[in-house]
Length: 107
Image (cartoon, rainbow, N blue to C red; front, top):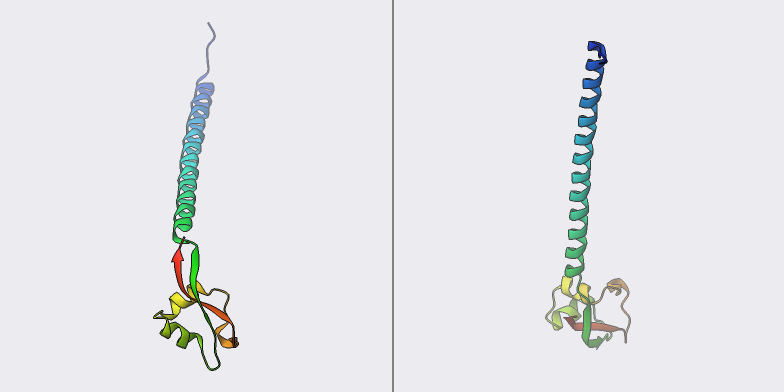
């Protein structure tokens, strides 16, 4: 039978503790990474639901003297709604005959 010195036993015990600590750290890291993955995937799902496509149903041709505010007011839209259905319109540079969406539905 082979005798193991007390120094070897201490080193062996120390190595076992190191292995347990590393395994514990690895488990915590994996759990944390899974948590982050879950959060990111949920935020992408929520973002897709929030950004529904708007389908313009009624348009208005700009006439001389009209502004985005006037067209929105005549169409019973607040400026945020007007901007949402006209995302590419530059209200500072409207021109006569320009088509503006004044009614839209979500797709």
